[in-house]
Length: 514
Image 1 (tube, rainbow, N blue to C red):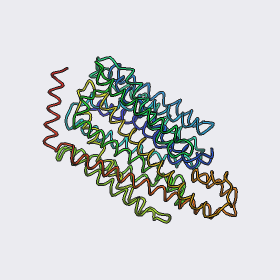
Image 2: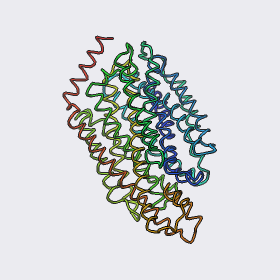
Image 3: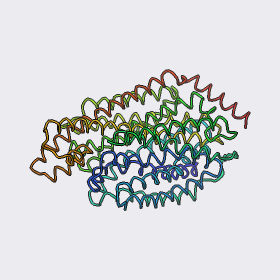
Image 4: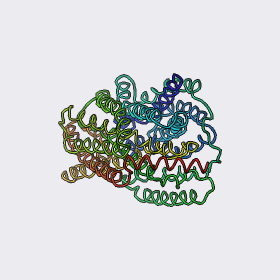
């Protein structure tokens, strides 16, 4: 038991490196925007770049870990996070920074799926595994939620690049613990890896995320639609390859199990909503309410705290009422949290209202995260657990990329639409160059305000109002996604007794075919 404790500590620390790198940049977005005079679209790409690299690679690298060894892949990914963090910290341009973030995401794609797959491979099925997954989910999610606080603390003294250096000592410690305590070759598969399917999965997800982020950028509609079309074609090729190949990278027959695919889709919405809330909330607190980066980071502490508190409750709810009820409780909390953001987050919102929304969203993430991950890993044979853990990671990262990108796109579109109305009311008084800067992002408007101090107050007031228009659009989308996810779980996920019967049935089928 003592060794299991050390193994779980090592895995959670490696997971924390990936999760902190995922969110630590969010609080630095205003500073990055000022440093590079970046547009909102460029900031969106910096924010989503890590998720893009991680989401694109987890399915492929999860299968690689199943076949060639999960521990070596975990070590490779955690070690690779170090140079990727250095590249991001000292990026000479916003484009270079976005690429460095993608590379960091790929490094995490090697490490992150192996953490959950090792839990499923090492811990026996039952309550002990559920508790381990609950801790993995809660502490991993909490580290992601605390990323903005860490970044805010660093930004009070250091430059924006310092937020990417924080995880380097954690990565070194994780490598040491993994090397010493994590076992090798546990329940390892023997089937060959379909590398072509791996490439197709990376290209499918990458083109989709880029398309979503480029759609709101003026002049990029053609390229965005072309990427969207390419992602559809690539997805069709990927599905064909899985059905036709002898050794599919992603076994669609297993994925068709109700406890698998419903949990997978539900988790995508849960973690996408979580990432979208932190992404837009960090900008709102700084740009609209005028908080510092550190103060903005502190607002996410209740999110992390109540996520950790809710996770053990989630494990108990699953044992007593099943994954379906537990997921629905999480969705209800998400609905209430986003409703507060939509109705009450305004220009002069009190701090307690901001914290109330984050508390409720933290409870929702803590409740929903464990059943989403547990249902996936419990629905597959242990030698294919990398497929399940890759899907669990894909929930966070594809969900984060999709909803974060979509919410960012609506924020951009709403901001530009509202500010365009202000500009139109001024007639020909504003030059086309200044108009372009005003419409790009809040940081662009701040740059114009500094250039024309006599109009600074009017410009920043208009920018705040435009931002509020955009974030209302984004929160409305999040509510629609949460309602759709709750409906899916309510109607498609099996009730408790049926869930137990199905999982036992899947285990028998898998034992006969192995």
